[in-house]
Image 1 (cartoon, rainbow over the protein chains, first blue to last red):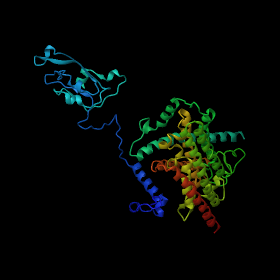
Image 2 (tube, rainbow over the protein chains, first blue to last red):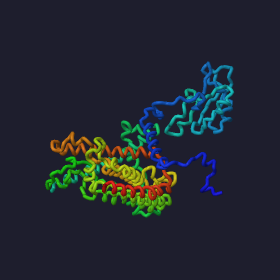
Image 3 (cartoon, one colour):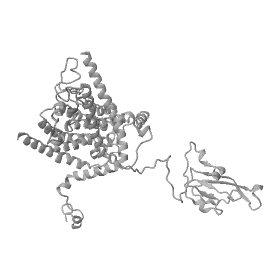
Length: 162
Length: 360
């Protein structure tokens, strides 16, 4: 069968031959021009002018991390290293220490240092899932922009106030 | 004599400044209109409403690295952007962008002979062979693109350059044939006389413009104008998905900006030619009755007529941009087929029709 000259019957059913007016393409072009003109004159645009206006993210959005405090104002983290172990990017560094005296008798360990390198972080949220004490969570804010790499390494205080 | 030379220089300055300032304006218009068509906002941060965006673009061009490929043909590589830039500007010299007496005979003294032609034309050079000059010079544009493509020593540039020369030459034929029917209709190659021929109205309300008297010629000329200026339905020489950047792939910094400006100036000149040939140039029905040449100062008439001309040219420029963001690029073989087997026969048919109508 000569496919070039005799297209299958199914092909013919789906694509009828164009008539003369359609072969000029001019009505179609005019239609297209009217369509673009309608969009041109449309007042409502989809652009969100970012620094002034911001989109509201979904509740499950994974932004920068935050360390939580308990009801007595103590850091909730017990320095169990679960989050650092779960982290696929290895961006969490914890230095554990014995709790200071003001933390009371019911706590043994706390993180003396807790740093997250936000440049390495892939925002997967595994640290939040791994945490047995619900001490770390992810905020709605996406990472900020800084001038140097050092500023992206968040220490414990920054994460507590985040 | 001296006054005449000074006036000529002033006229050149006016045209040159107008031409060069068309580029940033159409650049901004292109970016913002394309954004509006796509329901975006476009650049609106630099200056009020983004009006200073072209300035920022130019500053960026100046600070880009000036790069010449290692095996490029240096001399041709450097002069190619100039060749692409100059024809558009030269062509504008013969365009009558205004008139001081609505085309009525105007007394030209010895001193004003340089300023104003016998019919009050404000073109820089009021040559009698306007159309031929336009055709001859505007096709030089192809050299710039072909040289740029060939001298870069890059296969995509070469393909772009070849495409541009093939495309411009093919569409030049159709354009020339369309112009023949214009000449038959108006009986003159003088651009100013062609505009004067388009004065008045017919059937009481339709302007006597050639786009209404010669609709087929108008359509064909618009299509060939798009191909000649490499605008989007026919922008084969720089088809990004196929040729990286086409003939200017290897160009950077101000050399690229020259190509860019050349493209936009060619577009502006083409709009001016379309305005002159088909949209009645500096004339608008009723304006002559409103400001009769006998009582109004020639300067006032000159300003009004050049505003009319600019408005029409701006509309055609808008149309160029509008079409660019509406239609997709045609394929290379479709382009050639359109040029050779559709436009040229139609242009010939139009000549025959014009001859028949003229002889009745």
